[in-house]
Length: 356
Image: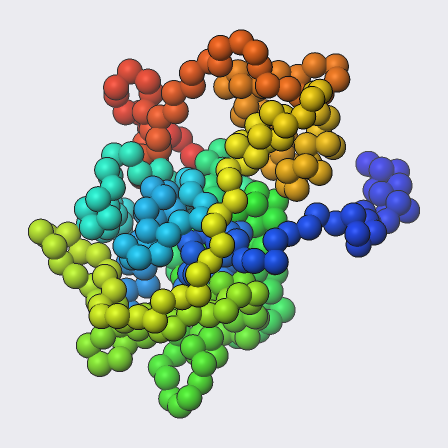
């Protein structure tokens, strides 16, 4: 092990010439159009009793079901959502999800939101970090929600050297698993003309860490949602209220808001792009050729190729990958259900045992 470590140290860090780096669109790519970047990390902040948890759950339902967030903002990338509610009881979380699903007209039983049911998760404890990573590996979420951050560590949030390692760990997870990360966090009361991000409790590292940030505040009886992005224009403030409909509670936009600038259409799903590249090719394509044609990361491409092979849609030959000429196998996927349950294929439910 010592020799291996010494050899790794002598080899240095991986690097590439600038022109060889993966290019990205000049336009922002969205998880939720105008609200949250596709693989953004960030803060959903606000004072107590500003419905931060309701907003986080609305985002979760939207991403998991591919339905517009707040019934207004379209989803650019949908998929499973993994969340840890550190303050609310699990039955409360379930009740709120049921209400939001009713408002969004989404079947609750088919909702791919997975809730970590462990009583504790500490981001500054090595064992808990490892268990969280293992859970992410199982669920493969496109969005991780942690609510609230203050209940998940014992560090001093006011000291940069204490909070920075926790934020760095979450950024590492985001890059490793190509997912978005949303932290719910508390804010101080407004005392002047401070920007919403300047009101977050703790070190300025928290504000600076976010690629996309959302802030909730009360203006009299009205809730106001503010939006902030690192690499995209921020939208106008959005007036919200918590509305009860047939016994179900959900946030709702109140009154007109200025429309956000039109966003480019989301790119086709990776599987469709890979299939299209193979259809256009006159011969099988190697992984390198597919990566260049589809302009996607190597890990994302390998994951997609594995899924397409499992579905019988493509085959691998000694020359590369090509579309299968046989009838594809029909794969039936059972959508995840909340609070750690999943279908077992016989119409019954069984417990999905996650490490946390």
